[in-house]
Image (cartoon, rainbow over all chains, first blue to last red; front, side, top):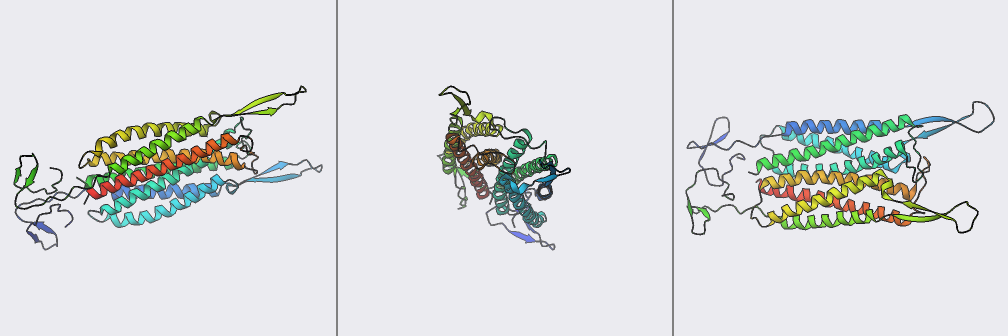
Length: 205
Length: 205
């Protein structure tokens, strides 16, 4: 009898369909709207974004041939740019992996809640807390990787860090795309926080 | 009549003190607890953290003397490390300034809410949304600056970015401290999201 919010003892009858309705013309307040269809769609988007960013990051390896100073002709050495060489990009990898796992788990919880007429407020509370935490983790990973990507693109002449994106073009494009998609994922998580807190707000009055 | 959650028409009497109480022994449910004292304390901590990080960042300038190749004795050139030379640290400055402003505004709203017996759910909803947004901004700034600070400390031999913290020690200490204090500020913001959503959750049942 979740939808009836009165705390007084009310005489009720049970209909043949099992629904409980109070007597004497009392109309129960309409249940708060269930936004879990939108929640589910946003979480699918989150899963797609984190998986895409992860795949783009992992496939970013680029090997180039550089001319050596050896006398014989056609002597080339190969040099590789790989995300494992940068701690910042390893952090992005870890954050995205956690994000993929988290979105799968919460998609399942969203699936269970979608069919209920009135999901429990405890579920909303837990979703807000963990969504905010994940948003923080993904936002910091965006910052970390974005900082490295920008440095690779522009360099920093004051310190003497040269740009590398003119040499490792494909690598830089992958890192940049992965960072932007991670930013989208963190924005989706903030939207999910807004959605869950709005649902809780609608329930609370 | 905010504390009485029944939607049925109840006969009520108004006492001399202006309080509305229902007849026939009905006891209204106790109002949900007001956590705004804790909210206020956390926001003070947030203000302190953002101001401290901002001051430490702004005072990070370090000038060193380097020997030149000129023939005359005592010929030194001065070189400076300054946060304005790095876009990542400028982003940290902007994020921290927004954080200081935001914490001042929300301290005022917290002050107003602290005295009320039952703050409006709308206030909680707004606080959750903006706290989550600010947490994301500060977390990304932490990542951005932390990435640069780590690169300054360790360098990256694969790309040829040399470490600079052996030369600019004071500058690096300031940047590192500012980053850590910004991380504390983002954690405080996530705690504030937890607190506000818990208050909303307590109100909703």
